[in-house]
Figure 1 (cartoon, rainbow, N blue to C red):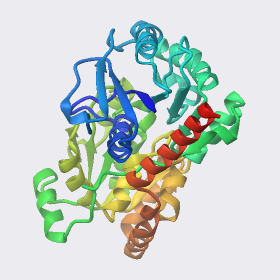
Figure 2 (tube, helix red, strand yellow):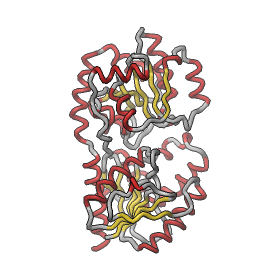
Figure 3 (cartoon, rainbow, N blue to C red):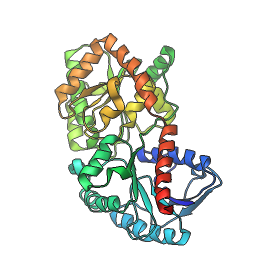
Amino acid sequence: MKIAVNTRLLLPNKLEGIGWFTYETLKRITTQHKEHQFVFMFDRKYSDEFIFSDNIQPVVIHPQARHPVLWYLYFETGIRLALHRHKPGLFLSPDGWLSLGTSTKSMAVIHDLNFFHYPEFIPWHVRKYYQYFFPRFVQKADRIATVSEYTKHDIVSRFKYDHKKIDVVYNGANESFRPYSDEEKQKVRDEYTQGCPYFLFVGLIHRRKNLTNLIKAFNLFKESHCSNLKLLVVGPRKWWTSELQEAYDNSKYRNEIIFTGRMGIEPLSKIMASSFAVTYPSFFEGFGIPILEALKCDVPVITSITSSMPEVGGEAALYVDPQSVDSIKEVMIQLFLDTNLRDDLIQKGRIQRQKFSWDNTADLLWKSIETCMGKLSS
């Protein structure tokens, strides 16, 4: 079987959540299934690091998919023509985007539908594109994989898609995320926070990630309890807003809020393993990989009770209402004061994290592909 894959998010040194999913699953699938041929479809010059095995044929398709008009041209002209030329038995899209004009059987991985739940967090032209095309992508798909039961139910209820044609393939986490010794942790703290313990926020600085309320909660935490705990923020400031700037400017403890910018896996894993707790009060997630990364590091997690996050955290996390600054603050205080609670969460995290790995994800995704391919031959 020849399988064409949308690999436009395999960008060197720029892998984000869906990019990592694409990388980790395809690396395993292509090397483990040499009996199949894979056509990797990039929208720009590709890096050889993404050509995992000799059964991969990389192709570059134009135009580059950089904004809604080019997205449309890329999928409805570039991808469509490439599929006609290469004649694969299946088109796999790890980011959920499909070519509506092709007759090739198609399988989409849909990670979340955040643009329906929080449309105000997305630029108008992008939101309109998503809201118009994603229902059509869903109906086009012969099969769908997704990364949480929450998103599966979301797809079924919103689009009336057959639940039997949706497979849940939970995300994994990079093996670099592991527990650190006390000596290793102190070295990291010395480097980033003047030797002090810290709450950690990891993610794109975007309104959906709720850093504004976290900063407000951190301010209240510091006011109510004397401690040397700091707030370390790891992530690019792509969506910095006036509301977030105001929260930061109004914080009496802004000198104890440290921004590192974007970080690679190795330094991020060190920072995460050395944190007092990961604070991830996002409004909405299709999965929430930082939660799992923290569990793999023996680090407690404070996260939201909404969407998929309880699936990932299980009994190993403390949950907050992301809309409530007081809710976030109270849980930060609870964890700070209760050493036994922190130890208990770490123990539960060692159990919870066993449910997730990229090996499992790749195996489940391949089973979904096989099911879809089986329908093709029936």
